[in-house]
Image (cartoon, rainbow, N blue to C red):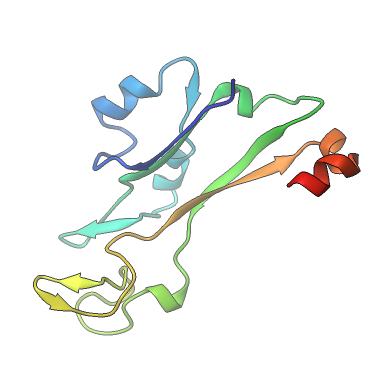
Amino acid sequence: PKIIVMGDFNDGYNTASIKHLVKDQFYNPMERLKTTGSGSSTYNDEWYLFDQIIFSNNFLEEQISGFRFKYADVYDPKFIRTWRGKRKNKPYRTFVGGWYQAGYSDHFPVYAYLEMNKLLKDDEEVKKNL
C-alpha cells in the first residue's frame, strides 16, 4: 500500500523522532526544504519545519497506474503573512498571546504535488469517479 503521514509533529525533519519514523521504507521531502531556507513556523526569529509530509517509497517509483510524488513545498503567499511590525513576513496568526488577530495560523501550510500516471489520465471511467 501507498502511505502518506502528515501533520504538525512539533519536531523538525532532522530530529530523532522523525528519523525513527523515516527509515528505509519512507521518504521525507521536507528535509530538502530546509536547505532552501524555507520554514512553516518561527520561534525567536528562526524558521522551523515542524509540519511534515512523509511518503512511503513506492510513491517515488514509476508505475503504470496510480499516483506518484513530484514535490512538496511550504505555501506562504503574501496574504497569509504578517505585513508589518516585528512579525513581518511570518505567519499571520489567529492569536498572539491572548489577543485575537483574525489571522490564519501560527504555521504556514505545507503541501505535496502528486502526479496521476498516464493510464489513469486516459481512463474516462476513473475521471468520472474522481
